[in-house]
Length: 412
Image (cartoon, rainbow, N blue to C red):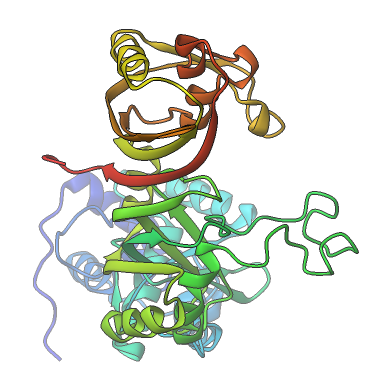
């Protein structure tokens, strides 16, 4: 094997290399003392060129290396532990890190000080990189920080690799046709999900939810341990969600399989949820979509059936007044047990009377996000001001409520 070419480095780096030459350092640790010199070289290549420049070929001290105690000679052991930790999981991208004993990292800082190097690469950084390269070769997966499927953490102190399996995300829109379904799982208030006589041992207030209906085929297909459902707001349990549907992201926790046939799953869901929930526009998603959905605050359109004997002209007059004034809504009585008690200012953006009959009428409304529509109609004992009931001067009761549209895209 030909000698490596001379390594063009500053004289101060060569002087540091001379001081390091007398130490028991493996090629990886000798080279990483100067890891920020010689772009494109591995640390062993860097060590070989430095030692050639010094005229000192050096020797690999193996487990006696004062820099890593032979760790780099045992990287394959850690690769095997990582691959074994991820058995049974599908993964195509990964990243890896490591946890170290503080004494070893402190010893490294002392070594740099003794040698006088200004170009060192940390033991942690070098090990993580080399571990990642060898996992790539072993598994065929791609290493890197961008959107990994799994994260490996090598715990050097205990000799174990921990694996974190990242979620799979799927986005879509749902229409809810069943007025008895909450959006998400609702733990029993009495037992807080543990199961009791009040909930029949289920731990739930309601037997099923939109989340559970939608998640069921995805749980089976992915082998995930759990799901989290992220909706762009939520409708009341007894309200239907119509129109184009409400945007959501389904998060599959610790999935064993990541390659999902969304067309087939959509068809399965259409059959199993027929008449209760419809899901459209299924597509792969990521964590950023969760943030987008949770932070969105679009207008919403509703159809509201109202019980109350009021003349059509008075209803139209009251609607005109409502459009001209902001609404001050104190946290509704029905959610005060789980929401902060404060006053929110909202507006009715558009309102029209759809039809009217003796003792009842129907409205179409467009409101700002976060408007409590039932409370705006009924008044909630004065906690919403002004309310439609207050403007009309008669008691009103919401008979039904449907969400007609979530205006989350331009032109809707």
